Image 1 (cartoon, rainbow, N blue to C red):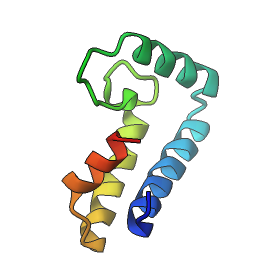
Image 2 (image 1 turned 90 degrees about the vertical axis):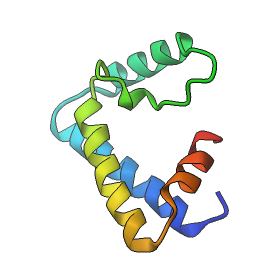
Image 3 (image 1 turned 135 degrees about the vertical axis):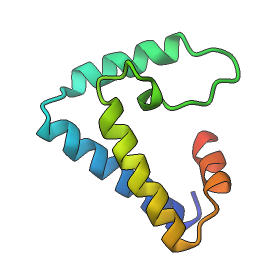
Image 4 (image 1 turned 30 degrees about the vertical axis):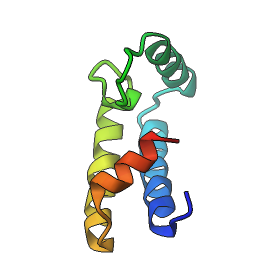
Length: 90
């Protein structure tokens, strides 16, 4: 991403989300299956992450991780909208 703060934010989000999913016994297969189906049915122009879908098996874990990610972005002085735009372009 070329920005250490951005990279750290992604890393923290993924670590939190993965650990919560593991702790709550949400299988990686279930997550992968949901994500693949979400991508197959993605509407043109939709840049939402699959975890934002209320039907995602890891919806709560994703939202919690994003809340921490947003707080950390604020502490780092990261413009959330610029960061989110770059993440969506990956």
